[in-house]
Length: 315
Image (cartoon, rainbow, N blue to C red; front, side, top):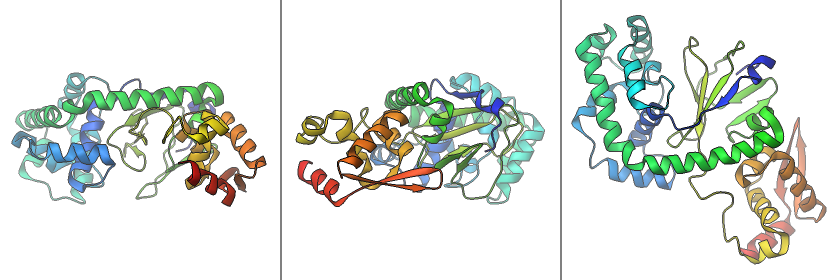
């Protein structure tokens, strides 16, 4: 994703989860069997109550790969989004379904949908609504809680380090190399924002990496995973001897460095700003607990043998 200065000034973060993005991405998780522990628990419950009316939706969302852009008009209200879906122009329907047909044979219903047949569009909106009611509504409060925790962490980073700090710490599968944001993706694709900015949408059911729209005729969005479906800030026992020795935040930083990571990774995992993560890493490095290695424009941190021994002893 190629940014101009104007684009950086127009980066926005969604204020609530997007119902249709959660719906479509959850179908990937349901069919593929991947995702973290909360998603695995969700999948076991949903499989027993999946409504037959959701069938048409399953023909549009395969286990992996492309699904039509018209399924995910950005928004925060399902009813309003479904109105947009049902009003999709025939040219957009045909374009998106033609892309899907490269990997999945179209059904007769999908061909009717491509002609903007009112009955086919009605079946689609009923399918989305029935699936959403069975699969998404029961866990919506959990999705909101995870979303809000992550958004609070990102607000701290934005206030301390600005938009570029936010972009640097979005996910371990994304790398900010100004003025370009690189996103791990199955195919190579260059998206030039051209002054339109970018809407960032956190998603409970997004997994591993970010997902953009394929076509470039709408406001650009990047949907990316809530990487921690866990209580705010840091893992392990906050009252441990390690916290008593180093202080709560510095102990948290030491724990997040256990698997290695860049400064922005450490900041994201610990729920602190990049400048704070850098300061704590410096103190830990001077104490002989952390080794920091410069890699191009970034710094990657690792535990020293002493740091690993301290962590093992106190966890």
